[in-house]
Length: 422
Image 1: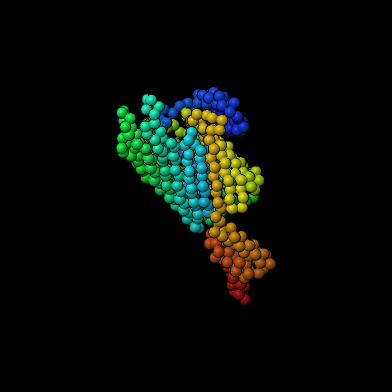
Image 2: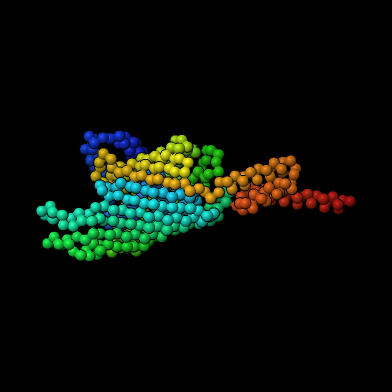
């Protein structure tokens, strides 16, 4: 049943893209119908810091949050902290999310990798105008309500090698704050410090696991075509007696063919102050397709009681820069002809020479095989030993050297037997 609903919502997202202002009235009927299907979560809205539940943007949002097991670009920072140690290239990204009404979210993120160690950092800021009026319609207070979050990430990839991509363990330390402007009393007088009394700051952590492997692979590539992840996000104490939006996440992704990626995330919210007040579980299903070398498309649906979301998006990929644009039809908010748009710009900062090193190692290995086939065992050994020196985890070269050692041992045994006969 859930799969049928997900497919229906994906089709619905494409059909609603060109809707004009004249069709805006139909959105309310669609919202009511889908909310009847999904139901309402009585425990929704009991946690603090909504900024932690709103993605900055990028490919992860274009797939409706089904990204924890993919985690292959800098937007992993909000979904799986284990992604940094498996990131192929260093990235710097800037995000803008035009959320509800006049509410905006700005973000910046950076990630890089040193061997099996990955590190990343990010900042995001939510702000919305706050204006208070009295009974006569006079403005008596104003300012901005804002929330911010800072993220520091590190992860390490254990057991990585040529055949096994490894098991990455990551952690992100996060600090979040909210600032409320001062409001007035019953006499319309601003209460100094009233906003500060409702402001708060809190520390928390994300912990994640990620592994990649081959499963029913139909094409030739060194890249693994499947992945799995387990993550707990926003783990920390309450803020002003309000629990954080803690979530346990399990996710998988699969590439049946080279250009197509499918992903599924299952999320279990936890109210750590009172487990009985936890929100209902929810899930996200996403699809991404590389149409050409410079254009990719994605779509996704998040199935959540009382607040489901449908997204479509695309990315234009250039030599060192890419542009992501996502459209979200968020059924939690009042539907308008253009519900929500997010933009992202990602800068490719290179791979620190990893691709070139991989090519050199492959070439040395092939030269060793060629020398071996011609009976030149000395040159074969030199090539394979150099390949291992450049990449100690290059297991085919180690296996070839072991085969060479076995052959030499066998030859020595034969020579010893030959001497005994004479």
